[in-house]
Amino acid sequence: MGLRTIQAEFLDTAGDEEAEGNLEDLRRINRRLGGYLIFRRLMRQWYTPADAFTILDVGAASGDMGRALRETFPRAAIVSLDQNARNLRGASPPKLLADAFHLPFGRASFDVVFSSLFLHHFEDDAVVELLRGMDAAARKAVVAVDLERHPLAKAFLPATRWLFGWHEITLHDGPVSVAAGFRRAELALLAQRAGLRRARVRLHPPWFRLSLVSES
Image 1 (tube, helix red, strand yellow):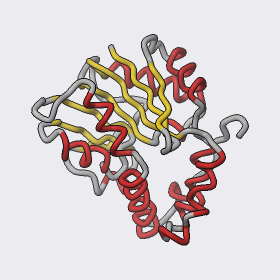
Image 2 (tube, rainbow, N blue to C red):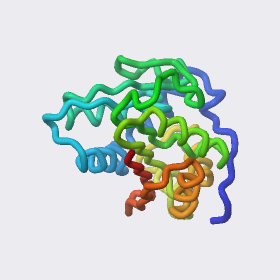
Image 3 (spheres, rainbow, N blue to C red):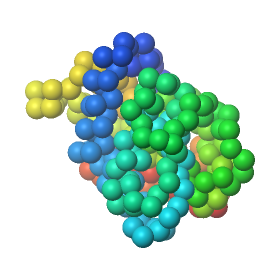
Image 4 (cartoon, one colour):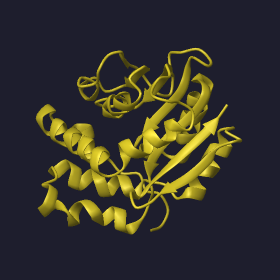
C-alpha cells in the first residue's frame, strides 16, 4: 500500500442506532483480533494484577479497552476521555468529555496515557501534536496501539462479512481506517518528531496492529 490517506468515516455522521452497531463491531474486533490481548501484554511489563495505577484512555469511545484491562488489573483507575458524547455514553465512569488536543490535566497526571485505534484518524502533524500532549500528561509511559497499513488488513472485513455479519459502517470505515494506518518506521518517526526519544514501535502479527511505547 502507498502513503497514508485520511478519508471521512461514516461513523462521524451516523445516527445513534447505526453508530451503536459499529461500536459493537469495534468491541468484537478488539476482543477477537488482538486489541485486548496486546494492551494487557504491554501493561504486564510494568504492573501485576495486584498493583494500583492510573491510566488516561484518550479517544476512548465506549471505553471497552479500559473495561477489558480491569479484568486483569482490577485495581487500575482508568479515565475514559472522548470528545463525542454519544460514543462515550457506554463507557464506565470516570469518563470525561474533552478535546484530546487540549487535555485538561497538568503534567504527569497519570501513570500511563493510552490510545487505541485513535491516532490513525489524524494527519501526521496532528499525530505529533497528540503524542506531545499525551507525553506531557504521563508519569511513566505513553502507549498507543493502532493499525498496521497492510493490504491483507484492508481486505479482511469485506472478506469475512459472511462469517461475522459486520455492520455496513464497519465495512466502510474498516478499510478506510487501514488506509490511514501506519508502517512501523512512519510511527517511529512521528514519535521522534513529538520528542518521544525513547519510543519503541513494534508490530503484532498476525493482528496487523502495531504499538508505540515511550517510557518517561
